[in-house]
Image (cartoon, rainbow, N blue to C red; front, side, top):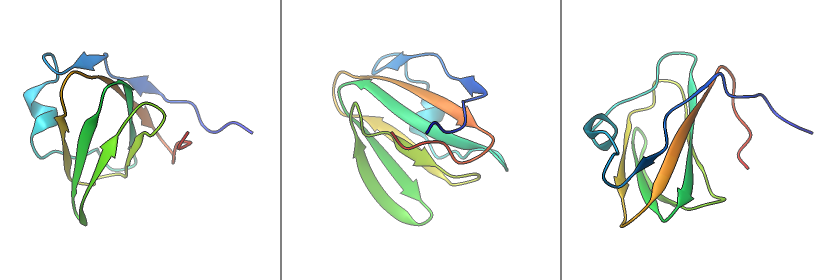
Length: 92
């Protein structure tokens, strides 16, 4: 069974091209879920509310709920992309 398809995706970023806005506190808009997919390497996802951290790797994406404050930090060389959904996305 497949889940909803993303309505939009970010460009693929690496540790050098990852925008400063994603490295600082930000959130998704109301009604928008984000799914961070790491294509290579590792990325630390820090949630601010509620406070927690998770290490994202290929095959282990990070879910951002609507209006959830967060930021990301590259852990060495990496490539990642964010998919955007109007409903909760599949986690795989």
